[in-house]
Length: 220
Ligand code: DC
Image (tube, rainbow, N blue to C red; front, side, top):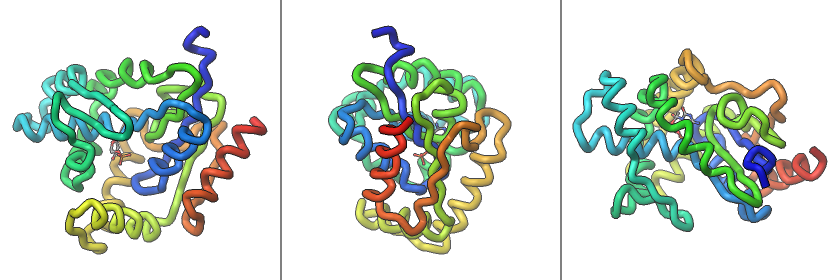
C-alpha cells in the first residue's frame, strides 16, 4: 500500500486536553499505530537539559532533535537504553519542550521522524500540528479542547499518580503560559485545521470522547 493511502486520524489540542488518553484508546480499538508527537519534543528537551545545551542555541537543539536515539516499545519510551517514560512528563521538561518547539529548526528536524510512523494498517497521531502541518491529508481530524480548570485538574492527577509533587496554582499558571506560547508562536501554532471536528471534553469521560471519535471515523 503506498504510504499516502494509509489512513491517519489526527488528534490535536492544548496541554492536558485528554488527547493522549483518547489517541491511545482510539489506536487500541482500531489496531492502529500511535504517534505521540509531544513525546518527541519532550525527549529533545530532556536530552538538551541533560547535556546542558543553551536553550537559545537553535542549531545545537535541532541537532539533538535530529539525532534522538529514541525507541517506543509497547507504551514504554527509551532514550538510548534508558527508560524515560516518566522522566519526560516532569513539568520542567514539558515547559522546555514548549520553548524549543517554537524553533523552526527543531520542528524541521522532527518532521521526517513523525512521517515514518505512518504504517499499515493505520496511524493515530496526537499533538498540536498533526492535522495542519504533518498529516494535512488525514482521513479524520479532531481538535480537543477543555477548560483550563478541567485541564489543570487532569494534569494534577497525572502528576500525583506518577509520584511527582504538584500545586494547582502553579499548574494553572503553567498551563496558561504554555497555551499562550503554543498558540502564539509563528511556526505551526496550535490551531484546529479548517476541516477538523471540534470536541470539548470538559464534562466528558475519556470513554465518551473515544466513542465520539470512533463514530466520526465510521461516518467520515
Ligand atoms: O503534548 P505534550 O504536552 O506532551 O507536548 C509538549 C510540548 O511539545 C508542547 O508544549 C508543545 C510541543 N508540541 C508541539 O509543538 N507540536 C506537537 N505536535 C506536539 C507537541
